[in-house]
Image (cartoon, rainbow over all chains, first blue to last red):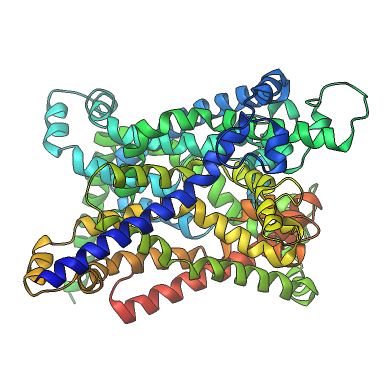
Length: 298
Length: 318
């Protein structure tokens, strides 16, 4: 008996070390970015800064806040996220609720119509042509309407409604003379706050982080969301072109450009992820819940 | 002789009463059908009309003639694609990249099993919160971080390489490195998040099984292998099928961001090619044909794996 408990103890120690190492590997890049954003770029670029901030300076954030393109992008992203999330709920909730009601006839066919969109799609080009022919290019609608709802969310919300809204409640309200509209607004929605929160959160994060729709549907830079601005700064290295480097027309040395670029880079990552970083610890369990509701098989 | 007309009358009566009942149902519940309208309008316009629009893959599409008006040309675009010199390169790159990701499929399972063995407490909680976090970082930022970390001069990784006595490596422009960077940065982002479903499945394992095994003298590792893994096996199978279903379509947006002319030899995949030829070069029909080829392969794979899973383990999607 004793040998078993001893080997179990060894297992416990090894397992804890294993989890700790994995966690550290995953966290390290995040800590590095945070530290780099408030360190002197020379220290970052030379490798002197590797864990904690060195020669603390907030110059990077100053540059970011002075940059108009980033602010415009921020504003656009906030608008797209709010409008898109509201639209998402507006389309998703009534449909899922209706599909959860047993009075609805032809449910099987309707569900198949939705499921088929999960398996088959027209693909990139035909979808693009539709968006184009609707005159949505270079409008907010190209960002918030394609993908406004998906088969997965409808199935999840439908399952939720089936499990949480008792038939008797709806029937009783009907006997009292309430219409389906009224029941939905006054009875169903107040009982469904958890699913509304989960669905809104997932969709909002998706909208906040997406760049591809903006890349293909928007060419007007004043409409660019934050992620496209980030792409220019972080990946295409268009920092100096954006005027972040300051002095108009002054030919900067290469070294100086590299310095400015890295100064801005880490700060802009932090600024872009800030809203999520702030809410994430509080909302984590909602996100986890969302995954779990979604994984319950129909 | 008499029976025949009688049955037709009966079915007629039956049909008309069915019609009446449907009418009554619609009259009573019309508001429920109104609830369906926004979503089904959306699916029609943004999913079914594009599916109908796939026909441009078999046409010579002219914008002024429209999708319906453009002339049919059959499989010409497909033939051109299959015969082009880049066809095999695209197919090979797509398959290798997807297969590489699929090989790492067990990692979140292993991590979930390890997390599950921890006692509930702050360490477990912190480890979960921290490892879930990268899931919420956008692809643009992830690739931006890669660009910063892997920079040949200023990047952290190359500082380490140089300190260890090596030569700086141009990771992001080297075709040999592209796949590793793509796949492992993906693991960094999704490993923690990927454990959630497995952890939930593990929480559902009957504690009596563990109790009985403990009485019989089974060690922790034995219990993991003989109780935990078999218990979550159905979950593993379903997630594996879903993974295969998106075999050819993973992470295209990230590949597009990581791609440059120097690493194209390995980073050029079918979907980035669709984007390039279709939306950048404007060859709509040709690109639509390639996109169609891609989704057909996906569907075949999904059906095939689902069939195999049902045969082998009785767990399947349908």
